[in-house]
Image (cartoon, rainbow, N blue to C red):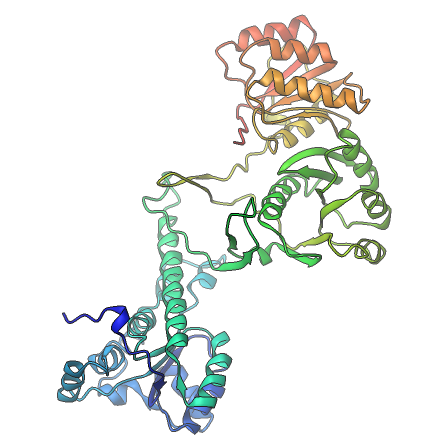
Length: 526
């Protein structure tokens, strides 16, 4: 094989004489074809694309006429032919290639316009079957795209209607395409086929619903959503990838930063657990809730959430599960809040909140789904992957392990506290009462210390811990945690259970007339 290193590739502008157009998404294709025809470019095409171009009275040669081999197997084989791929892959600056192409009657193709069967859109439909998915796996398209991208020194490749305007502008002006643009579009093409192959591989990885193992190959291909000014700190480069615009619309204020995105992610995941509850408000700081409350009205929920910790919310994030009204907006506006997230805003609330230009306002378009598949975290040498923690507990699933059963009010408080503690970093302790967090202890190396911090915060805010429910994200390893809770004023406890000292912990609860329930699952958040 004769190779040409990158620094020896011809970098001269490319004149286009022949173009191959074969697209699934035909947006803008007629206008592009007309411009090419007006520039005396010969157009080669296939199937429905050729028909659409021909209907616009633009001359077009069918691939089957060129290859003298008809499209076959229900359209599965169209462009897979040496006269096509030889024309795309031939290096017209490399004399041995030129000689061989002349000997085989292969004419160069300088432009390939192709996009692929809508595989991702197809498999996203609820009625998609493996047979339908399989028929939407494109073979000829990716092959042409990869061939053209490989030979970008001699071929231009377009894979999206979004590129046509830029192409047309440069082509109209010079009747040729620069090396820089060809290289850029080749890079886009390789990323395009990489994402396509990733979607197919991931579909087949999850096709067997009975297979409980995670995939043998981790495939991630995400488009850059936007560049960020920096990462967690100014000396770190950063960008966000994926389709965040499907979930949120940041319609006012500066663009979100790296840290903003992590805060918003934490807020959305918490409020998703409260989406069907009464009016709920949560206040976050550095991805940790510092106050959460549920009430009959949103402004009351704000009052209760803010009362948990009146210091931390400065510069924080507020998320609600109902339309943000003017009464709640006025209260939030009294402190500096960096981000406000709501499913909608009243006109009066918007008029007030938009007066501060640097405040970000976000509209929730879609909450994180309760059937999210895998989560990822980069580590040395690769990544960790796990299923999303979407586990929820109902009252019927709670197991009372103490002599005293919790009252109806206590059960309500326990379930509320358990929802919140899931979103607090381990070790996590939450004291709650009447749909309000009274004290939150987060991220400590000792569960007792986490409880002490939660108690101290409540006392600092003048909140009584009498009659509270306490939630622990993991089991109490010793009886001292339950003893401290009882001493603080808690009357009931929710925890996973599972410690070798469970009996000691239960005995300590019984001695202090605490009601304790086990959930059977923990919510570590590291």
